[in-house]
Structures are given as C-alpha cells and as structure tokens.
Length: 75
Image (cartoon, rainbow, N blue to C red; front, side, top):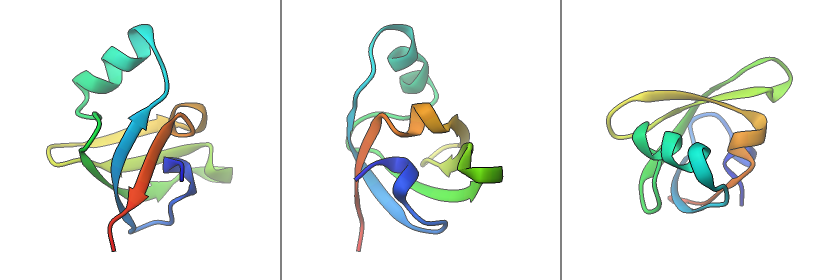
C-alpha cells in the first residue's frame, strides 16, 4: 500500500521509500525513513498534497512524493 492511499487518521509504518538521490536524503532529513511510523493528518484539494505526522514533526508531501512511499497499516 502507498502512503497516499491511507485515509485521514490512519497510522502506518514505512516499509520502503522508492526514490533516490537528493529526494531520499531530503525525506530522511525530515524524519521519513524505513520502519518509522506516520499518521495522515490532512489532504489538500484533489489529494494533491498530504500532511503526515512523524514522531517529531508534521510534513507536507506532494502526491508524487507520497506515491513513492510504501507502508503497511497499524491495526
């Protein structure tokens, strides 16, 4: 399942981040890394952006960035 497929309020754990280069390092510096938990807090208009909460911060991602992050739900 991809990060942008979660509903608002659902929590998940990141399984893989399928990007490379500077984007992967930027996401890592923001606190998004494999085995980190995230919670979807808000979607923008037409789901063009997604706001997620990590253990330490809120992060807004573009739809294209969120669709590269594989997660599994925490039940």
